[in-house]
Length: 471
Image (cartoon, rainbow, N blue to C red; front, top):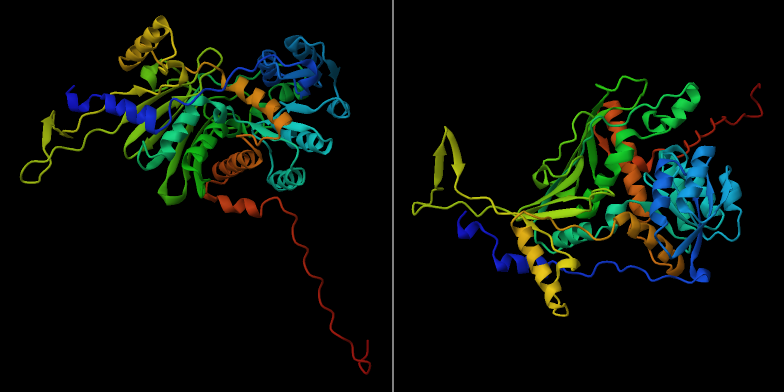
């Protein structure tokens, strides 16, 4: 590759400095005294709830004093996972009645997110609810009114990408013009084979055990997967969509479910910007990072560059790569574009830039390091540029979002994933499913009238009766 296409020191400075990419990472909290810890309960100790408890176990600015689930096995598992000997409840209203509980985490199935969140706010609790925040259009309007009437209570939704350092740095790059005019985002969450139906001899218990697969309980792939990545596009564009079109179908999973097993969606944002989205259940390949990751990721595309980014999971930390746009085509003296001809195809001589890992605090050279620490940082950065290593975030964003919620319960701060972020995300889920079900373009302003009580028809007018007329 020619020197003009290689990333120069100036490129690195531009990305690392101008975009603020060496900002400090969220610090690890020191151990809190017991009387300064937020006392919290967790409602819904199934797979997601127990996952949250596993992460909460390592967070010291709060203490779990109660857990709740209707399933005895889940309840026991949740209590054992957190290990604080919490009180156990099967009725969440009994947990909310506890005066010593400051806050609650809600990880129930989607169809009961709103009623539990509503009751938690009415009980005076700070509330963290997993995405998608609400299930039905009427819940959007009611929750907005309720939460806004209680401004001193924290309400946060579980969109952990908002708490990832790399996603925050990507947003800085977008806002500071490093990528030029950002016009498109592409996102995917591909799995193989995707959700499997868990057998159960009791038909009703089977439906509840597999609630994600049934429309009466779930928003399907859109709610459970796409919601995360729609939020990324909203965040990067700084806007919500104008409309959505999409295709969803059930082509592979014929096991009694009634949700789609694959969806493809296109969102139109202001100024012609677009998000294209895909979720399938037959292939987990991710064409990013040399296919070293699978399933989910986003591509943020601008006129001057592109970011490849993924949140990862417990075993794979978030990572991000930046690619500058190819150099402008060479122009001859006659003003014509110089072209290369090969195998019958026309290729403009532009060249593709080498990817640069986005560098965060771990690899910033501050001058305060020991000789060995400094050499290790230089070594890692050199390996990053050669593609031998990829920089990874040091803390799981799930830990950061859970810890941040507890901090906000104490300091009254506004969550990064607040009420309006959550409601915008839920709106996108509801309207996207509507677009696929009705096979039409759905405008986002339709939500303004959806779910509202129908206006009462005016009473029929009765003509005045003259006294001299028979009646």
